[in-house]
Length: 504
Image (cartoon, rainbow, N blue to C red; front, side):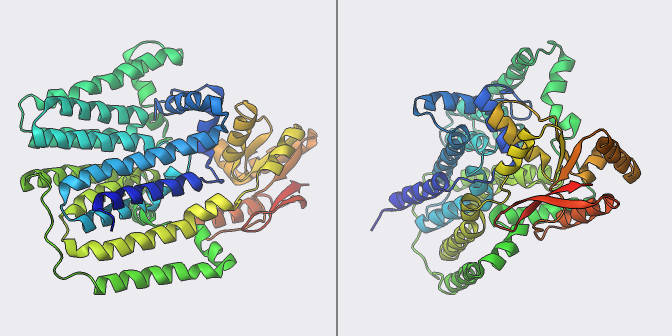
């Protein structure tokens, strides 16, 4: 039999290998943009995640002798950061529960959550900062145990570094700061933890030169808060809408639920066995849960300190969840919730170990079947032939359903930021330019009269069970009433053909 430590190491290794072997082939528009920045060495210091692209660029320099594909190298970096995050979580769990079975179950449940798996297999900006935040918590717990101030300084440095990789991690830093004030055994502890945070404004100030901005306080604030001031970091929706989106995305942080789920089931009905077996396994494990498990071993952490750690990270969870709700329930801002919840559940009775293990296995099977494997193996958009047309037809306006994805892939392929003949789909173009439907149609007619060809992929094609997509498709068709659509090309995808349609 493997020891508890070996089982935990084996679990982390298996999960990390899955992420390394199953990178997405359907990267987001942002992921392509970050890859382009790293590939061509520009826009390396972006305000909302200041050092993230720079970290990717350094990683690429390290791998340069291997001549890797840039986006593949960055996907591998996130997968490795995911594995490091699980190693840090394991360190925390070993101090918070003496139950080997419960610890393994919590580690498996966090590692199998879709929020972590999604970003471990995508070139987004959320896993590297989470790795540093978890490392900060490991050092912070060491300070609580030993009273060592250097450990607290390390915690502050790692937490501040996480903020430089993504501003979102400021909530984790704030939670540890409050926890230090409430629970640290040493006088002057706040100063030791907070001092490294001075590196954050200092680094932002140094970044002003990179963007050729004046070295003034106003310029610094405007640069650091650019995404919030511009609204691109998310803004509050109406309260009912924010509550609905928050609830839905909390669920999606653990299990992949998307418009593609039913479409996958229609194409591959055999996948229905995954949720059936998963629910049956959880029910069986609940009924067979141990009534009198072995007494947990000691962890070397007094119960009062364990409670302090859980309360501090419970506060961090509330801060992050509240901010995600403010940002219209942004799922990307919830990536840390499974890690934080695992820490809180160390207070659960060891009798829950078997049901939690079954739930973790069911989550992993679901997220592999409906998330990682389809995203790795299937082509959802088939953009390359369309992008070739964009490059070959400079006199055609391409009004594209996901124009940012097309633009950023072109940026990655060519090194040129933007394509002069790519515009949003008609409904989005109208919204962006604040036109009435009549003004949009007038503009389209004027472009035709000037000899420009008009092509769009917003008509027809696969429609997943997504309310926004359905409404947008209907609006696009309504806006183009009076034009004669003529299909001139078809791009096969797993969910059905997409059409490139001329407007005449």
